[in-house]
Image (cartoon, rainbow, N blue to C red; front, side, top):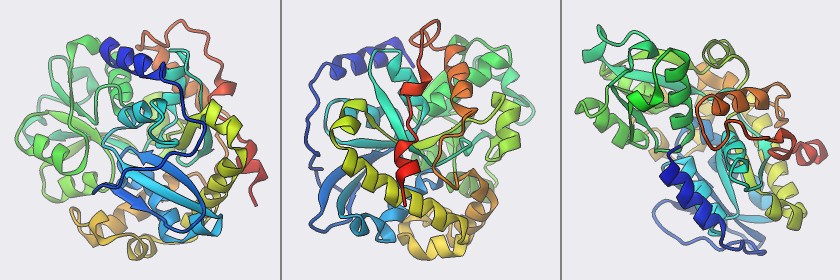
Length: 346
């Protein structure tokens, strides 16, 4: 993440956090579970991405209301921007990659994952077919335009790490924030980026049109270990430690809903998911491609919600390789996540 981005986050972090659950602003990217229960607002770094499926799926299955919660989900193009909004007290939690809790601790901000939803990133590096003879691995990235969801996002973290791991100085690549979905697809089709890191259903959409080829794939445990050296816990619900300590009952209810959702995922197919989710979630890729993508990558979902014990050290290793706000810092990983709510869930 750039110094400018982190400086902005640090400045926002100085704002005192509200002790009460936030009330979300209604807009086109907002969805509420309704009901008269406890209000909670969660901002998700791409609601229609399959890597963030549990957040909307829990709403569609009625699990929030069953727990006595009125959850508002807000859509945001990148996890780093969602984190900024949470630090500013605009939302109560973030649906994003766990690694942000580590990065923020490097800046003196305490956040923690309360439930782990993905044991692998589910990310794929796609490149335009026009550069197939020029880019055969990240070792060929020097001077290239690389798409990430946003500067400071988890895809930005991973892109910089993969560049450095393959002998390319991260300062020598051009990282461009293209978010996901239609904006990323447009950037790829118009040649604004040579490669981009993204997830389903965007991967299937680009592959179906013959626009791109897969450079590397982190949708499986083996693929993740090959690129990152081990498990890399990704999607989670993370919140400020202050919020968690002040609202343990609300956090427990949220975790209960997500543990049930993760169990549901394990016993259902892509067709079941597509039938449950809003139709616009698969409008771009098509329903059949959406179903196939889910069935192919179903293994990315954490079946229990427990943080994989060997995962956090891998996340830390990746960030320490290039991020000046984490490199050389004494990071206490035990403060970046908790399993207590998952263990107490019934």
